[in-house]
Length: 332
Image (cartoon, rainbow, N blue to C red):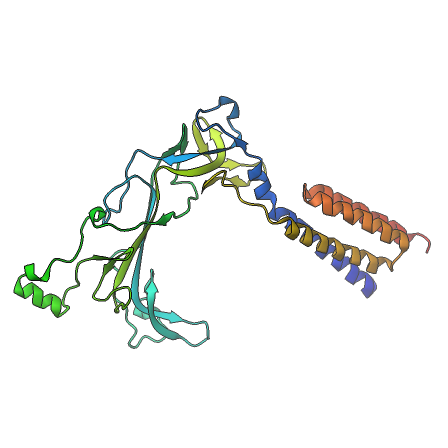
């Protein structure tokens, strides 16, 4: 086979591959957009087994808290982040670099490339995530434990919501205990520093090695959310399409669907792929006039069809290739 035809066929294959990739990227938003809007005031039996979207206040009557630090409140989701100010290793330059920084996962001394003088204290507790087993949007039950919920907003700390609060007044401590604390033989109790619960001898502005800061993010009951999934009884659960795709979203605000890509991006990629395929056809056929017209018509139709469904576009592309091949075999 001449080199010219090999190059042309390669371009056709590349162009069609880009077409399929471009179309598949928009499959999920189109599917979510087809969800039927459900009434948040009542369960409609006619929507059983269908993909629905319901918008309303995500609420729960149960409480949730951090058993170590925070008193229970009506949280849908509560996430605790624990970070230590300690040695961190950076290997971006090929050579290990070490500096102090905040991290959720302090490395043990045996994990460092250079172990001398790089020994981090052991963590005594870690980041955790708690979710309600059941919550509601109107009459619909939504299981936040199974849903891909966002982490929520930062929780501003108040002294009255902590299970234990600030460091005691030094004047109230026995002399021996005060001497131990001044000698830093024992760590001080936790205290609020900004939106963090701080454990250590430094502070957020000037942290010291081994200090720990704790923060929380949460979704409070009563916020506006949209759940998209399959209606099963009075529950909204994950919807599995015939192609095996899972459609299940719980997002803040009105009808939280995944936004399609900008039209300019979709059409730009599709147009570029069509030009690549057309160039491949022209190279294969040596710029035959009839092949040029057939290729333009077939690829133009393919660009349009790819934004509706990939299969018609593939068929149109196949028609264009067949027409071009017949022209190739005919008289010149």
